[in-house]
Image (cartoon, rainbow, N blue to C red; front, side, top):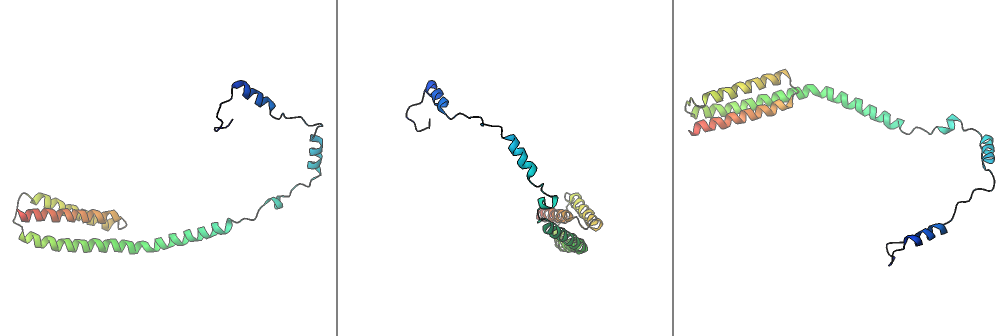
Length: 161
């Protein structure tokens, strides 16, 4: 029965078709003694012949060498990265300090903004200290940038009022 048959077969018709299928017949004689004799006569494969040549070893060696070179390169690069982050933080501090100094001279002495400005200045000083303590912490550089940006926005608000 296929999905393309126009009429479905009844259960009786299916049973008769199943009975008409080929039946398994047992062998005319016992085959196991011949199989056992052939297995005993065949030479046992040696351990050396079972081993295939190792094709993974050169790749594993190359990967190990690449890993060692990469780790060595990263360790040698670390001091440059430290100095780079510190230089970027110092340049950012100079730029924002210059911009803030210009704005502070224009701003009126507003007591409303003074505590917030002081808190942001204190926060920037703490972040610069943290960068000096842990120069590999790149996220501190972004935190310093955000703190200076907030300080700049707050100073602009103070100038506008």
